[in-house]
Image 1: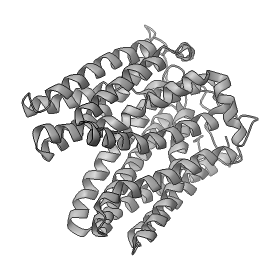
Image 2: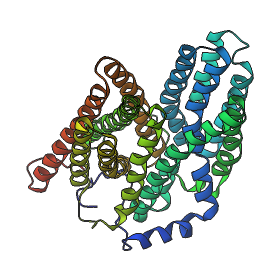
Image 3: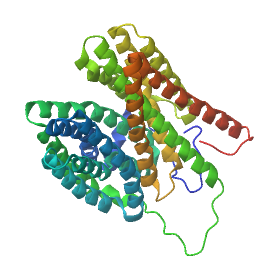
Image 4: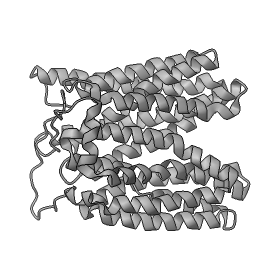
Length: 423
């Protein structure tokens, strides 16, 4: 994969001989259609639960502040619970951890559904927090499975995962809105619980869980750390920072586009403007499998971050709705490929038996970043209008550019024999 690392204990990744769109045909042969269905619908509630909690808590308590606190508690819970569940899955196996998380999450979500507006507000917020804490991490653990199942087909597998994530974050909130509007907010949370109960369970028990290696038990006597251990940990931290920056980009974009729609006199169109960005992202993510394998990950990272920076600049300067739609399409066209690239870098750093922890930690960075981005952009939009929110988006993309450029420089130095290996 070009400038991928060569860690002796990391997952071995060999480029697939199959390139182009036909590479996707390999995936159902590797895992079966039932797996693809389970991993797709099993993660749909991940985009439904935060909005469903916000909607129900606001409706049941009559307070948008309580709704906001409940949604924030759910996001914070997920940010903490995701890496913890990944580490447990590495130690105990994915099936048991996922099944336990499913039972707990469904129970807490049902309790929240019937308790909101009845129990004290603090209890409502706490129930939202533990619902987020126990949310089954189907998407991240699916990526961990692909590392073990199809290391030669990771471009197609991770591109598939990226497209599914984009589609989930388009249709999940829309489904919550429709069900809450035409039936009730309680029906929306119960629908999310039912999807988790059915498809997260199907994903948990799918035969592929047996192929994921467990983390080796620690020996009784200390073992010297492998060469490059410190550099690897630094790169994991950099990857997490990249994911947080991606989350800030997402949260800032959502807030900025909502603020732009409001200033343009179409306040209900903010979600539609963001959907334009997500559709553009999905299209280019699908197309990532046509890129030549010799184009390294840091080159992809830097190029995609530069494209996002251009798109963010265009959003900042957009004078009208058609212009902001074009800018959102441009930014979205690069955000999906960069998200895919960051997961690829994280996957290349995953050691045997530790992929679950690394993938869930990486994914939790997005959750943290979205919260930060939405909060900061909201304050700036309140003070300066849409341009303030889009300034947050531009700042996040510049940070991503800086990370990509630093990685590319280190990679070139490594190739010349002047520095240790880096991805």
